Image (cartoon, rainbow over all chains, first blue to last red; front, top):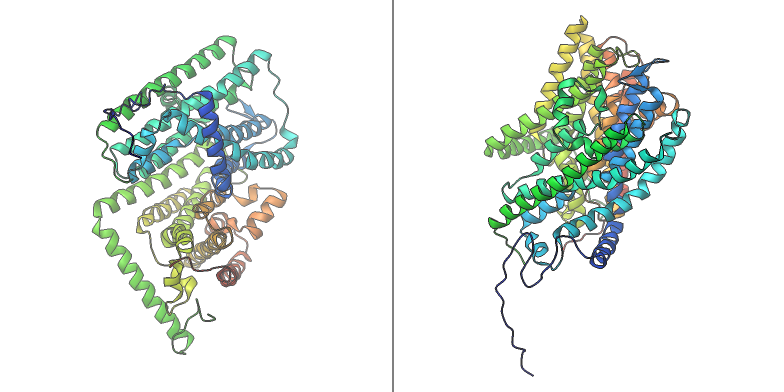
Amino acid sequence: MGFPTVTTTPVTLDADSGPAIFPRSSFPSARKFVRLLLASWQDALQYRLEGAVWFLYDLLPPMGMLLLWLGAYRPGDTVAGYDVAGMVQYYLGVIALRTLLNPHPEWDIAEKIAKGTYGQILLRPMSIVGYHLAGEVAWKVVRLFWLLPSMGICIAMFWEYLQAPVVPPLHWLAFVLSIPLGYLTAFFLKMTMGYVAFWATNTEGIFVFMISLEMVFTGNFLPLQAMPDWVRMIGDWLPYRYFYFFSTQILRGTFTEVELASGLLTQVAWVIGGYFMMRVVRTAGIRRYAAFGG
Amino acid sequence: MASVGSAVAPATTVWHQFRRYLRLYGAVARYCLARDLEYRTNMVFNLFREGFYAGLQVMFVNLIYLNVKSVGDWSSDQMLVLMGSYTIVTNLTYCLFWETMTGLSSLVNTGELDLVLTKPVNGQFLVSVRRIAFMNLAPVTFGFVIVSYGISRLGVQPGLADILGYLVLCGCGVALCYAMWFSSVLLVFWTGRMQNIAAVFEPVVSMARVPTDVLRGPIRLAFTFVIPLAFAGTVPARALLGVGETWHLPFAIVAAIGAVFASNRLWNRALREYSSASS
């Protein structure tokens, strides 16, 4: 039995469409995505204890800031538009939303590029975005195991300050829409950061610096209203406030309908802009990528 | 292998043992410094980076004072002393132990721990001091500058005894942080693959930025006695400001010695779970 004749087709490694022998769209079919998600879910389950450690980074720094604020409030105080109950609800919202909506694809991308194994991802007959998205979503689902009991403890600790948000249905709808948009804003920005590894050997310093910026401009340390004017002015030009700060503000009920629409449209713009920026950087990076490894 | 991890040097006095370990530590420090200086640009960049992050942390916490006059009884300048003390204690801990803590998981998983355990030196000592991250000396220095600045703004003039007491409390804070961190990293002997276990320390110790007297009820007790974060910021700062409790210093010394001893017991227990992974 002889070997079948193999017709070799020149493979062009194009960032947008992948190898020509595997035509694909930039987003995966639902079936492939579900398969990827399940595989990533199994992987994430194996490392659930590691997930608990990363969860502490989402939980404890904002909790520390909340405890500082509780020490600062005097009866009847309102600080930066927040009474004490509002401040507690803000930080609990930040903890929950940051845990669920803050992806970190950049570390995986940079590690694979540095090791020379990113070529394996590029050559697979599937969407690169879908590959990373499935991995990140699976990890976030596992993170729920840690978030839910932690939020239960937080709710018991701060019960006296808590009340369900009283906002019109339109605000709830906007809140629901802002969740995936915030996630994708962060996701594409961080994918772009990850592709910096095509040029930089050691990206850890860059990522840690970006996390510092993120902590300020997403409202993780302080609500943006409590920041100095110049910080807020800079933040207006950056996408960070649309990661999850915008969602927390929707449930405060202070936005008008116009502000809601404008905020959601800005999120959409950041998602589209972030996606194209990621593709441009990735394409440029692949052109100079000299992979090694099997 | 009853002698694994224990000293097998000829019987000598405690003083001779101490000098021997001191000489060994000096050799490690010289090696690490030489290694860092080989990549001077990298070291300068890292020194700058670590100092910058420490500065950011101090700035963020003090941004609260743009909105309020005090946090509990802590004014803005007093908070500078606390944040400076926190920066000193945590970064000294990172300087002395960061690289070894992050490397322990790999030592256990790859079986390279064998090489450590068969050396004629205490195993815990060797795994704890194999690397020194000199870049973290930048934020330590920055911490002292912040503390001095806060003290000068407050007009407090601590005496020599106060300064010595402060330094001892900071030292005890480092020892307690080490014992807590090391004990948590030992979990890898039971869980196997857990590469990021050393990272658990950073978010936990970040809670030491909160003055413990601001906390209420069980959280306050937990942060003083169970996870003694108070000694990584609040207690040294209060001592330097002249408002510390007299029992803090003897308690800190006893707690530090006890915690390091307890971590040693846990290390010996963890070694029983270790089976070499090397070929």
